[in-house]
Length: 217
Ligand code: T5A
Ligand code: NA
Image 1: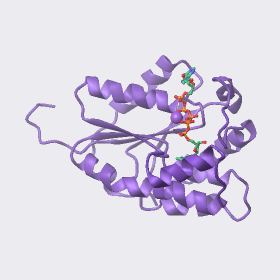
Image 2: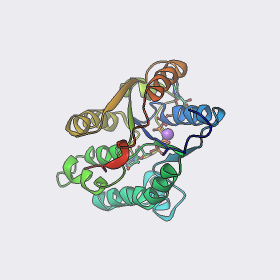
Image 3: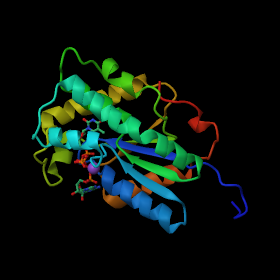
Image 4: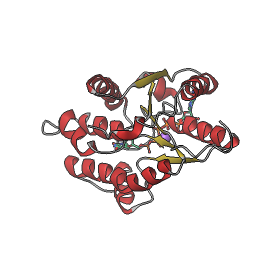
């Protein structure tokens, strides 16, 4: 592209996966790579623990506060909704946005609690209308391999049994999705191997102006 080209909108890249699958490491690498290429880029992580909903989420995840399953679910969703306008404006102004966890985590972690009144379908519904990613990665790793990476910490969902239900539910959700292609990445390999995979898929993404025209549904 020549320097005189009118600025195109940015691309919305989402990396999803299990705890310890390496999402944040790869988001950071991609962010650094884009910056070194002179691209305008922003890195967003959900949950964003810095906002008032984020404070509630952090207290919940670290066990300092209890929350009803439905209530905390909606707070996680609100944490995305309150950010979406600014993400949308950045994309329109030509900034690429890399998102570390998104609606897909939102739906599956809540559904994995096995609350009989909280189905995957119910959990997905508050995500309807959020921006659809242009590129969606799923970092796949067995819960046993993930647990070996420094071991699970003390946060609420960091237990192998929960992680294995989450993995199954991610696959179930992706199979149901309509109009969103999922790039599955074997995240059990080295950081360099995973990064090379991600980069080759990112480079193959065309800046199709219609890609972002529809929302999640
Ligand atoms: N959640 C989240 C919900 O319930 N609802 C929601 O709506 C959302 C958005 C916190 C929890 O919240 C839940 C899901 C989570 O349980 P979080 O803040 O994203 O979510 O979780 P974190 O603890 O920050 O991150 P993760 O545990 O998910 O880790 P990452 O980002 O997948 O992995 P990363 O890159 O930090 O790496 C973990 C360790 O592994 C090493 C790293 O150096 C690091 O030590 N590592 C590798 N080692 C070997 N080979 C590789 N390829 C490696 N890649 C990374
Ligand atoms: Na992370």
